[in-house]
Image 1 (cartoon, helix red, strand yellow):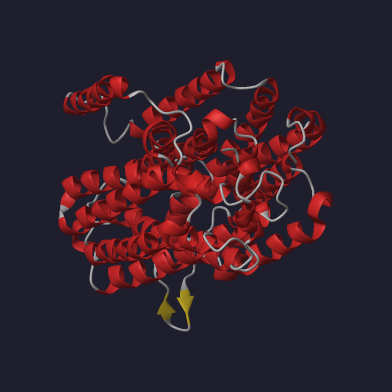
Image 2: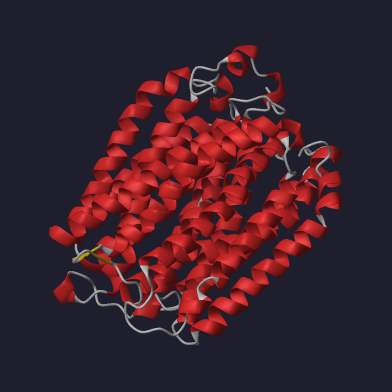
Length: 488
């Protein structure tokens, strides 16, 4: 059943802030998943490079930043596995539910297993689980709307509000626990948050439309053993490469970048060459390519909040508030505050403008350009001493980050469901997340560069490149829109 032919009841349901009631269940599980994810990530880099005396592992700063970038990229890279399982075996809703369980187990491992083994076990489980949940939560939200339902972008903005409620509370509370009781207590709180989200979602699953459980392209059961063997072989190969030192903490981020690029190219080839994709659907996939590139560039800067901005906040930001020093992880909650304040404004704006709102390519172009401007705003403070950057300046910079994010991220989630071929519904969302994976992994690599070059060069070059890409996409907006074949 296509999104355009869903039962009219789902389209006429306005009981959750003007949106379908089932949006509340997905809103809740995503909020708690983001609470656990960002709560853990808010203290992860510090845990890696703080000394043992401070409760950390004492890993060199550049290596630690690369690990965080590689982990973040792996989260989004694993969306392709979760999307494939959803489209071929279980359906989006079931993969979402099982992924939430895996995430909870990952946070428990971080909390209970000390040292590097705990980090490795926990991050692998959280990466796999988060990848499965992210693409499928987005896909399930898409099933609540008809293809041209004008509430669609507004609904995704409300969904995005849930993400950022969790992202705001997570670093605040885990940061407090980390500072007062230690890192492992912060990780334990992340596990508790995910357990709460899983519980509330289990009660709302039955209200979701049947299309959320549909398997669009079922894999014949006779082929299940083959793909199971392939999966096992991949795991064995990775273990062997780690054991023999081919994959190390120092080169992990480069490997993730390479794998992500190969996966993205392969995904585009598979979708575009599929006999199940119609001519119009193929044109829409081609239109997604420049959006993919702009998204990757955007996220390579934006995701530095968890690498460069964290290091910057630890060493360069004046966090003194009336004699009290604000915990470093709290900086990660500034952006979610702005999202919470502004997401409703953007949702109302898109709803009020309706068909007159800017097209998706123009929104992407504006988001990429503004993100570049955000990086240029670091230049007046470049090269300063320890704790020399005022907190107010960081608030202003992160406000610019937020405006850029709201122009691109929820719109990207929405357009990926609108441009998706029928046979690749969830996998098209995973393709959008591959752009996030690429950008996130690149952000880890760029953080290593940040530690070796003057800040004026770093922020100036990266900000300038983003602005040029944004302007180029704005110029190409009309031909991209024609390829989108009626989708705006």
